[in-house]
Image (cartoon, rainbow, N blue to C red; front, side):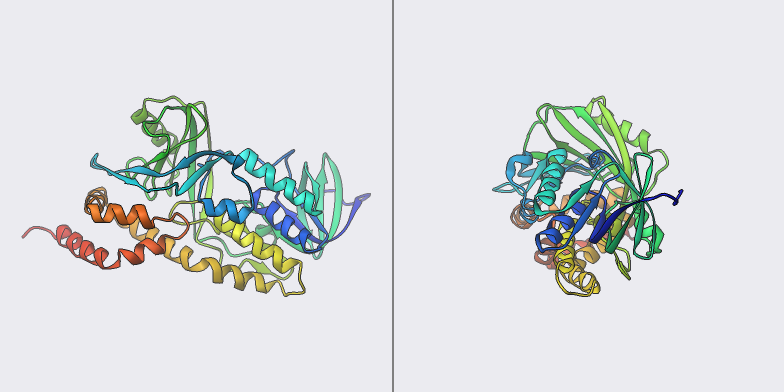
Length: 384
């Protein structure tokens, strides 16, 4: 990129690269605390990642400080379909999740950041970093800006992480999702498919969204044949896609998320939940922590300590669950779901199930898991 004749934008306490929900939250919190903040977005407006099912907990809405106007569905339960064709029906007494309009959600957070005092520059691409100077390009014009702190909130393929040489995430999943015409039997239920023929290493989903449509997708660690797998899933539903999008989901947080004057957050830091691939809740929690650190007289390393103290237990547990699940075959998955189909377990799951904190349910099931695991090991022994 040409550097001669470059326009100087100014000097900021914080420059945030990426104006999605996580980046906008960092900008809002830092600006509220008095920091001079510049928020950059390479597009005209942040893109809604259509590989994302947009299903979050009510807790996530509260953390984001976004009202219920972004909600298109309230979810009380779901069907988990086993590979052998049987289904587990789980229902809670009250909504445990909500499906959101991601465009509107992003818009609300971006508006809140600007109202807090953050300056917003869309159509501006961050090109490279040299010490405290960030070189930019806006509509073909080279620019540069000086920053006290650089925040990489630029998603799974973070350029900021690449420039600075952060360690990689533990792994990436490939997610693909279609928007399809669909009238579900229960508008407050999701469907999950645990079938290694469709979603090896992860799962597939049907999430009812706006009236008459659903978000149907899958994630897997096997990129080859993913469009065929989606086609097979849509065949089960007898549906044709309106549009299809795909992208990578990083799971297993980077070993470091702070280096010098640079911090990573959200998908750039691989803070997504390994159990579901959802990144909004942990990303927004971490973004609020980072914003609070940035507007005080604190070392940036405090962000690393605080977000790990708040989130790492669930993220580590999620990775453990993910590794165990990847080793299970279809017969074993079907057996586990049949075991959990007992009334006492269904009641427990309906009462304690929490998409943000799976440890709560696992702790309650700990004794029963040991009974199930022993039984499963006996079933896996070869016949004499």
